[in-house]
Length: 193
View (cartoon, rainbow, N blue to C red):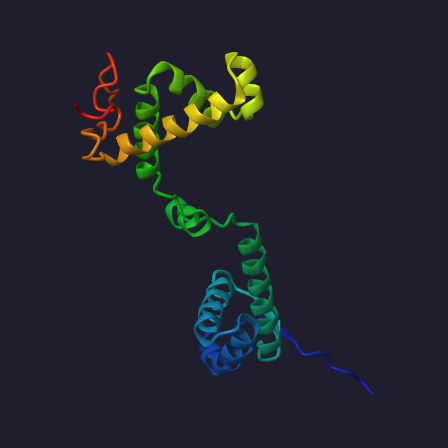
């Protein structure tokens, strides 16, 4: 029994079209879609035709091996490539920026109204509402009774609210955002005579 090994010859480019349908089916199975499979076959055939190849038989097993190697190279290259996205899409999807403009303007109005309070009220409001002291701590720091702290705090808060809302009964208008109300007395805060 003599076994004659098939002779190795050059891959015949004219015979490649005969293998394309089977290669395309295999490539579609590897890549997951018909279009990606066709691209994979095209890249494989291009690589094979760049230089003459010695193959045995009709060359189909060699082409399948080349197809799998091309697919493995693509997968490897894709996994090494850094995935990028545009920053705008990513940031908006993850953390949409809240519009804080109105909150900043309101905070400025409140601070301007607090700063326009008469000194006794202003000290109590700043101590309790801004600094976060308890009534007892504020009373001790300002050297006044706790009842006076509660009374001045209530009246001070009411004046701030009336100033911000522009209470027409009090004759006041809300301060313009970012501007400090005119100092010098309690104009706009005391009842009109």
